[in-house]
Length: 74
Image 1 (cartoon, rainbow, N blue to C red):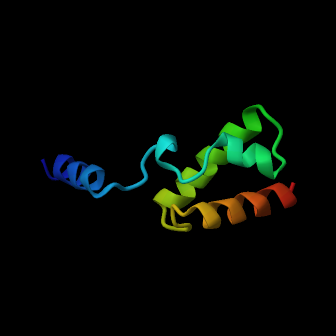
Image 2: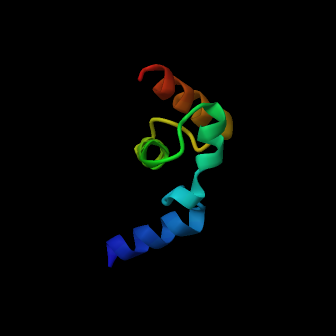
């Protein structure tokens, strides 16, 4: 029951748990220069993982900066 209550608390707090909860989307990544296709989804999933793990805040500017860094490291 404790796990269920923790999940309920996370959902109620508005935590970023799904791609739709991210402060950016695929259009934002393509505007940065990502090519339409699997790389966009892969990058969004990576950024979501980073937000969930606490490495980045779910903030538009922070995520765009992180995405730009990923694009430049390719």
